[in-house]
Amino acid sequence: MIAAPAFEEGASGHQGTGKVPRHVAIIMDGNGRWAKQRGLPRAAGHRAGAEAVRRALQAAADNGVEVLTLYAFSSENWRRSEEEISDLTALMRFYLEREFKTLAKEGVRLKLIGDYSAFGGELVERLERAVERTAGNSRVTLVVALNYGSRAEIAGAARKLAGRAAAGEIDAASIDEEAIAGELQTADLPTLDLLIRTSGEVRLSNFLLWQAAYAELLFIETLWPDFDERTFGDALRTYAARERRFGGRG
Ligand code: FPP
Image (cartoon, rainbow, N blue to C red; front, side, top):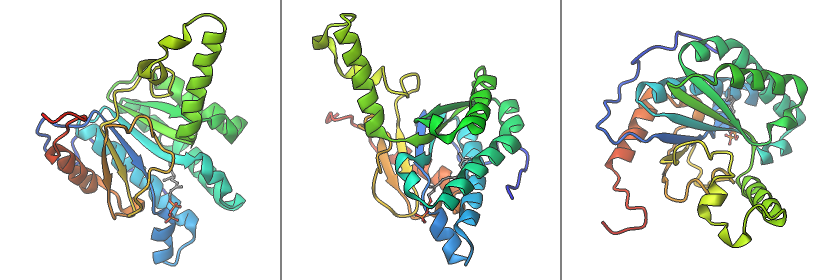
C-alpha cells in the first residue's frame, strides 16, 4: 500500500545555493531488483517505487525545482509480461486516485508525455481529467512519461514539420533546431538541466535524447524504491558543484 503522509512544506534537507536545476528528469530503475533482494514479487517493487515517486515530488517542490519528469513506462516496457503490465497500470490508477487530491491541493500541475492513449479508455480518461484539473497549478510540474520513446517523439516532430512544408505553410529550408524543439512534447517546459538514472545502469534507454543534449547526467547506485529526499538533495548538490559549459570553454 502507498503510505500517504501529508505532502508537507519544507520536509527535505537540501539548502539551495542558487544553482538549483529548473528541470530534473529521472529514469526510475531498480524496482525489480529491490523486490528480488527481499524475496518479494516484482509488483511489490513497483508499489514501493510509487512511494518513492511521492518522495521525489515532495523533494522537488521543497527545493524549488520547477519540473520533475519521470519515466514511468517506456515504449519498450510492453515487452514485459501481461501480469507485470497490468500491475503497473493498476498501480498508476491507484496512485492517481489516492494522490490526486493531494497533488491538486499542493499546487502540482500534471503533464503527460508519450503515446499514453495505448493504455486504453478508463485510465486515459482519468489521466486526462487529472491533467485538466491541475492545469492552473504552478508550484511544481510533474511530467509523467507514459509509453514514451524519444526517437518516436523526434520522428513525430519531423513528420509534423514535413507535413507543414508539403502544405506550403513553411519553407523546408527554414526547419532548424528550434523548429524541431518546438514540436516536441516538452516544448512548453524549461530546458532539461539534470537527468538522473537510478540502480547503477548507465544508459539513456530512449528517454529525452534531444532534451538531454546539454543536461548533466547522473547515474546513481540507489535502487528506485530507496530513493528519498536525501538522495534528491545529494543529486542537487552534485549538480550545483558541476561546472556547466554548454560546449564553450568559459
Ligand atoms: C523500473 O524498474 C521501473 C519501472 C519500469 C516502472 C516505474 C513505475 C513506477 C515507479 C510506478 C509508479 C509510477 C507513477 C508515476 C505513479 P525495473 O522493473 O526495470 O527494475 P529492475 O531493472 O530491477 O528489474
